[in-house]
Amino acid sequence: MTWEKDAEELLDELVKPIPIFARPMARMGIERKIKEVATDTITVDAVVRGYLLASSGSMRERAIKLLEAKKIDMSPYEELLAELK
Image 1: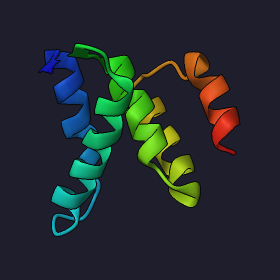
Image 2 (image 1 turned 90 degrees about the vertical axis):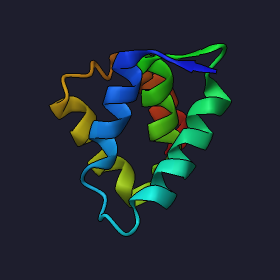
Image 3 (image 1 turned 135 degrees about the vertical axis):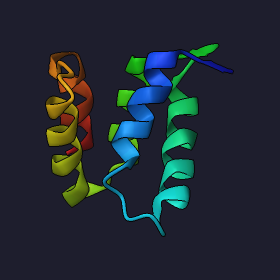
């Protein structure tokens, strides 16, 4: 699978708030979810979907706030978020 540059940069930004000692494991889990939803190319959309799927209950609200702070329009993900509740 190939990564779009914007997608890889977004993932780098999303894992920055995770404590350094936990970051590699968290990144692996997030990447696993991203690859489950991606097709041939990993896009920003796949990163957002994978990130939301990898975020557990209480962390999901924090994930949404971080995505919104990155100027990601969350409206395309409303159905996914409803399923995750």
